[in-house]
Amino acid sequence: MRLVLLGPPGAGKGTQGSRIAKRFGIQQLSTGDMLREAAAAGTPLGLRTKHIMDRGELVPDEVVIAVVANRIDQADAANGFVLDGFPRTLLQAEALDRELAARRMGLDAVLELEVNEDVLLVRIKGRAEEAANQSQSVRRDDNPEVFKTRLKAYRAQTVPSLNTTGHKDYSRSSTVCSRLTL
Ligand code: ADP
Image (cartoon, rainbow, N blue to C red; front, side, top):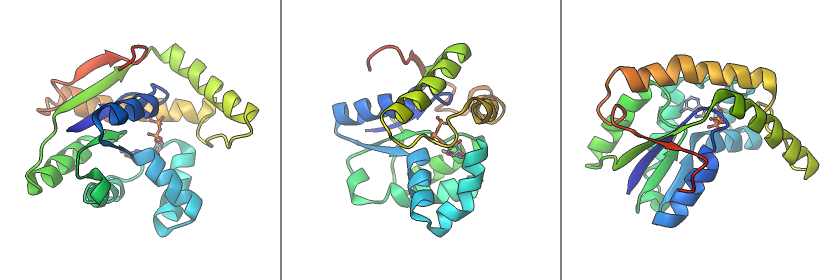
């Protein structure tokens, strides 16, 4: 099974993606996690993208497309995957189509998490506080200022390109409320 999980920052893509992955025995592929790991390891990819993520902006399409194309070929993704946070632009959606078609694969569903924006801000603050209380590292982009940029990127780049251009898979995405247990 191959799924795409979309939603604004702080909607719970990571949490729901992990539940979905366990339930269906597939791999969770989070572009945010992959980029954060690259940044932490100081790889060329990480060095190139870290400052962009810290500002809350989107990493260039060609970079993230190459990361995903490479990742879906790894053995642990052979049984299927849930892409968490990819695609976020029309170019990414089209590239995913091409990459899957080249492998004679397709998407089974696109799920979009919908959460009220006021609730998102409260969650982001809570997430940062919780991490700090547990002495875990706080994501550098989990602060109200950067969060506004992340939300703006979602509204300006992701929502219009995926929802209003009528891309075949995304225009029929199922909208689910992330308060529900998937
Ligand atoms: P969130 O959706 O909560 O903002 P993610 O962990 O999914 O968090 O992403 C964190 C950051 O990683 C984004 O703000 C962006 O800089 C980068 N990123 C992740 N996925 C993509 C993507 N598909 N395209 C461009 N940038 C991405």
